[in-house]
Length: 393
Ligand SMILES: Cc1cc2nc3c(=O)[nH]c(=O)nc-3n(C[C@H](O)[C@H](O)[C@H](O)COP(=O)(O)OP(=O)(O)OC[C@H]3O[C@@H](n4cnc5c(N)ncnc54)[C@H](O)[C@@H]3O)c2cc1C
Image (cartoon, rainbow, N blue to C red):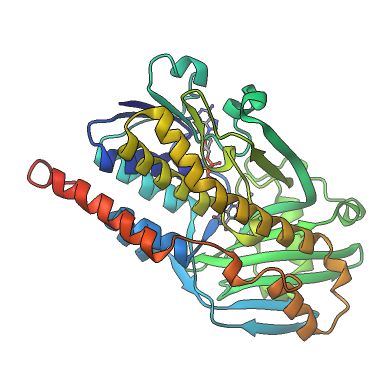
């Protein structure tokens, strides 16, 4: 089978590596518009469930990821100079650049061809010479946009503005912080992802953004977003303990909701953010993109024929992702109405935030069931044993 993958983000690379592990004879070509280390953002969070699936599918990759992840067990809420610490969680996070580099290495070890700095040919063109085309081309997927009607694409930009930043202040928990400013309240989500490095995402309502005069001018260029990052650091000076904020292609954006009534059209499949997005306040988009890749690899291996594989892939992934999208929507709406809660006492504010008004609990965040993890482990172990003695993988 010949497979073309558009986009070398976490979804595209993980799909390539896992299909190659299960079906070494598959020919897989990946196109990536950017250069290898040219990417946006800072660290991304994984829940425990996500890592369980990765461990079962590719223990070698898991060992490398686990060694590079920062781990913590608390959610801290900062509000008007006071902090509540909530324990009993299990989170891991890794730098997006490190994650992509590990996935790239794994693909190279397994014999996947990746063309960096090259936009992929149109999916319709690729479909003429490849059995399967995977559109892992992110939230702004041009593949999806060219066939919105066929995919039944819905969504649009929604909610407040955000700026994805980093800092060398070492947070020790998933941290939510509210800053009362002369322009109105702003809030931030922060977490550690490497020694001495943390992600810091600032979120600001439109009216506060305009009153504060954030311009976003020059954002997206080297050094862009710098002036706004410095101002935000000033508003959150207590939480940041005086540390600066860093930029990396940081530009003000709004969360884009993406949903599709169908995830495939002919032999072209959407995967990861091109198929569905979840608000970053529940930190799941990377995990969902990788889980899509795992499900698609299993479906291709099991069914061989592409149409059946695509039906199985969507049937497996749609319930989980729709459930996560519902949870993410509740979370995003809660943060959008934050001003309703900021005058509550610290304990009440914390309780509302942690449970998102009683509707969001840890149990709402699905992950692979233990049975499914065993099945994944078994399928990849069988693929490994087929290969034993033929090549070191
Ligand atoms: C502020 C913020 C914070 C986030 N925090 C988290 C978090 O903590 N945890 C988490 O799990 N997720 C998080 N996410 C979400 C996460 O970044 C995405 O869900 C994830 O990157 C999706 O992976 P993907 O592979 O589908 O797409 P992407 O990572 O977007 O990769 C798509 C790739 O395709 C390439 N591409 C696009 N078009 C073409 C083309 N025509 N030809 C060749 N290449 C092309 C792009 O250059 C890109 O490299 C966050 C997102 C935001 C905005």
